Image (cartoon, rainbow over all chains, first blue to last red; front, side, top):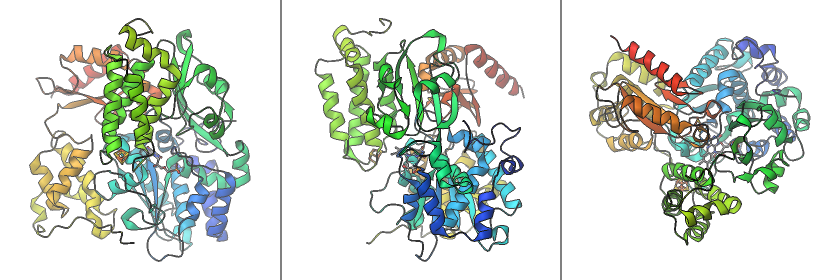
Amino acid sequence: MANEVCLRTLHLDRPWLLSSYESEGGYEALRKILKEKISQEEIIETVKTSGLRGRGGAGFPTGLKWSFINRSAPGEKYIVCNSDEGEPGTFKDRDILRYNPHALIEGMIIAGYAIGGTAGYNYIRGEFWEPYERFEAALEEAREAGLLGENILGSGFSFDIHTHLGGGAYVCGEETALLESIEGKKGQPRFKPPFPAMFGLYGRPTIINNTESLASIPDIIRQGGEWFRDLGVENSGGSKLFSISGNINNPGVFEIPMGTPFSELLGMAGGMKDGYKLKAVIPGGSSAPVLPAEVMMDLNMDYDSIAKAGSMLGSGAVIVIDDRQCMVKLLDRISYFYYEESCGQCTPCREGTGWMHRVVHRIENGEGRPEDMDLLDDVTQRIMGRTICALGDAAAMPVAAFIQHFREEFQYHIDHKKCMVGGR
Amino acid sequence: MSLRCEPWARTDKREDKENLFSPEIRAEIDQWVAKYPDEWKQSAVMAALRIVQDDNGGYLTQELMDKVADYLDMPPIAVYEVATFYSMFELSEVGRHKICVCTNVSCMICGSENIVEHLEKRLGIKMGQTTEDGRFTLKEVECLGACGGAPMFQIGKQYYENLTPELVDSILDSLEQDNGE
Ligand SMILES: Cc1cc2nc3c(=O)[nH]c(=O)nc-3n(C[C@H](O)[C@H](O)[C@H](O)COP(=O)(O)O)c2cc1C
Ligand code: SF4
Ligand code: FES
């Protein structure tokens, strides 16, 4: 039971071609919708039934999000796809773009139909040149086949998709920063409300979804909301792409049912590399709280299980850490990332990320002070929940979790001016 | 609600846009402009900056940014804001090959430090520097979304994954040969 939705074409030779996609049921959902004139309500209901939750990290129910759009409002409405894929550890959307771009295109068209929009933008991070070219080629194929553009399949429904390339800024993955970026500005998140469903791209009602969320839509329509839901477990419908990386033998992207035990996923990824022991796992991208090995080995990969253990499924980016790694050093690097990427418009995030990084960095370098642990606790609490976008929380959560679970390593660094692991 | 969302205004619009860039560059920028609503030409600013940067050996100058501003009817400051915000824009000269090495967490635990060390030794420069012959620049970057192939780097448009010092050598050797011209 793997690769049943977004990676459905992966076993084929040149899986990214229209012919490959169509041989696996591709564009059947769109054809059916247009031929049978299936109503917008029915499509949104099916997506709700499927239990699909946003795959970009926040896990918001996709069908519910779509229902927030006022479909009868006059004027343009937009579908925006988030292919910015910047959360460290995440590399699944790249594979959708490279290996099954038509699933995303069909998903965006269906989403456009469901909200009464006629245009979509796919925001692909600027470094993803190969995926961008694949996606563009697929758009061309779809246009030529009459599946995209004016009067799709003679139905009277028109929808076109354009790509926007990013410029290397993690914060542009945040949905409103992404909109600002498409509007030709620096990518600073907007204050919410209003939410994009009311006031989005160019001030118009807009739905923003992650690449994987949208690429899941065609199969949900084709095979039914229940079918998708029953692939997974309660509260976590469907299967999901996990990007698993780190100290393992066979890192990569695995599309497996929600609720699969972590131990099984680790097995698929070839197990621990060179026989080292599992020490910790970051289960949902670098902003998700780290979990110790013994906790992780008992968990299943679904929203509720991971949340109960105090972390997040996030984007499904699983970073596997072995016992050679120093947790202080890892946190030093992670906190540097958020400090670098803060857009600077909220004081707690701009100043707090700098504080966290400086303090962790001095602990790592044997210059930690006895009061530093309390200082870090204090700074994280002053950031969380007090910022315009979730980057502030994303920066604070790993600091809190690393200290919570690996306090003795930090203390050792402070007391002995060196590392517990390997004695550096 | 008094929410507004409007493009930047530029009163002194330049008429002779054909004098700003070569026909090829203009055609390329125009392709991007066409993707957005008519009044939102500025949506193409990132694409325009990327295109002129590539054409200029990998970096932007104030003159180029001003031309982009003229071309898209934007105030120059709005273009500077964009050019300074996004890390892929270079505001000073870079080597012919910019090596963007990911040192983020997955790459780090898979040995990106060895790769950095090897590169620095081979090229005789530190991160952030350019070789004297202007061939290579070393740049530290954040996660490039290819952690399954860690450690990795990007040169130009190409990703190179599962790097080892030997692989790095063969990649750089082949790039140096390309430059035999
Ligand atoms: C700092 C930050 C970075 C984000 N980066 C991404 C990203 O790279 N890709 C993505 O899909 N969502 C990202 N998100 C989440 C988006 O804001 C948004 O929730 C998501 O695109 C919505 O789509 P979904 O409901 O289908 O997940 C990020 C959020 C924050 C706060
Ligand atoms: S939380 Fe940080 S990244 Fe987000 S808007 Fe505020 S300063 Fe910018
Ligand atoms: S951490 Fe290096 S590519 Fe993601």
